[in-house]
Image (cartoon, rainbow, N blue to C red; front, side, top):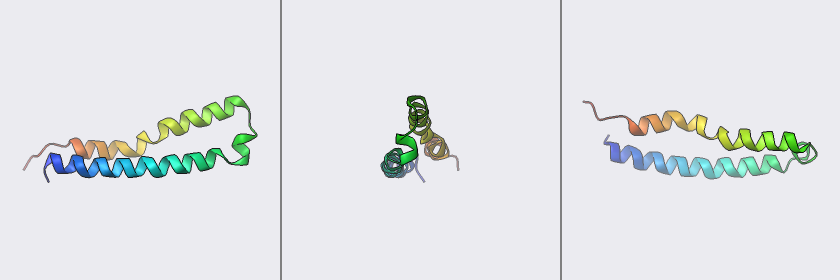
Length: 70
């Protein structure tokens, strides 16, 4: 598969994943235990959730950047 095709497929997957991830993160943020907790806990939640989407995407990004060796 050409690098250009992998990048296109990967980009579509990343966009879909981030949209779903953001909706789930917002739903969890509305949970009672997050709303009733201190500002520090809420900030910690948003930092972890804000960075957390990158980790599952690292293998996909590595696949997208793989060179065409045949």
